[in-house]
Image (tube, rainbow over all chains, first blue to last red; front, side):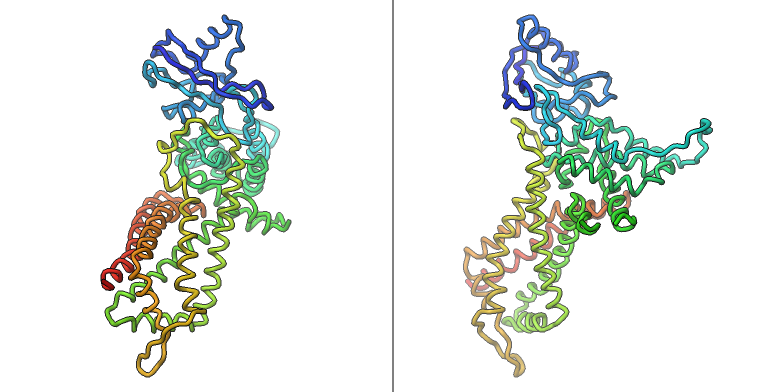
Length: 249
Length: 227
């Protein structure tokens, strides 16, 4: 395959940045998108140019490290992570536009790398449960109905890649935050901090400068893990219940 | 900051106000439509004028109408506040964007749709509400009682093709606004349920077609009658 890559290059956060076009050949349809990027970077390195910086880690679709806004969609044309996107999803001779996630809360570090530590701070604000020290508890000591366990697990499959923020016209982090609120709110272990969690995580989400939700559904449509909008409704319930019933005046 | 202002100033609190005021305005549309449909009763406006007078003099309706104006204002102000917040949240836009592959047009353009509806609302309030309240109204007599002849004002306005076109087009915008807003309000309130959400979606779609269509029907019929 021969392709033209229109890649966003930006030296650092202070740099204005802009697109640079790179013609690239010898790409196999079976390569993953990131392997294609590796080929580009080898060529750039051989020419003595600065390779394109992009985030990646496991390349198995489970870590949430890869990002990239490809041809107008987060993680490209398939509903998957960029590492699991293959070049067969593109046609020979195509021009592919590659941009970083765009959000105030995700500042560009360099080229296509953005700082997603805003997500970490949302988790730190309340996405945890208190556990007693001491002996290891027996497995299945606390009975949890299968349906609830499944629902909580579905929410917990969120890998925090930020595609929801990237897809949302408001750069809202509601799908991410709602998944992290939901996975604990549904389980007995999550009850102790339940109300505080909703209030604190949403306060942190707002403090990070994410936008509001318009219920367009773009986040869920682009989420590589299929996190559903029911989580956002649940988070809203959690938050309103907490706001109107806690004694945090 | 007290907990009330803190809650209502949070992103979710702002959305809560949008949803609650939106749902109230949806209810208002139904009541308004019920009144308007009386324009089509072929009695030269008698039922409509008596109904309008009754509504205007009912203390409960007067309180609700003040609330209605307040809710419209809250809906507009918070829409502006949220739109600004959302714009700030993405300082650099994407060069290429395939938004149509993941969301509906109306869901992404509620602000534009709302702005057009607001412009219509201003024309509408100036033309009818202001005239009814403060204008020199013609009168009509039914059973020895003198009533303001709102029917005459309305039928004169609807004999003007320009006004009819503005009205009908605006109802189109309202339809798209409602097609997203109805179900969206329930989602914001946290009312998402496997049993009821599909029903809410369907009712929302039906409502967004039926109500604006019936509103639009009135000026069309009255224009044809005026010919």
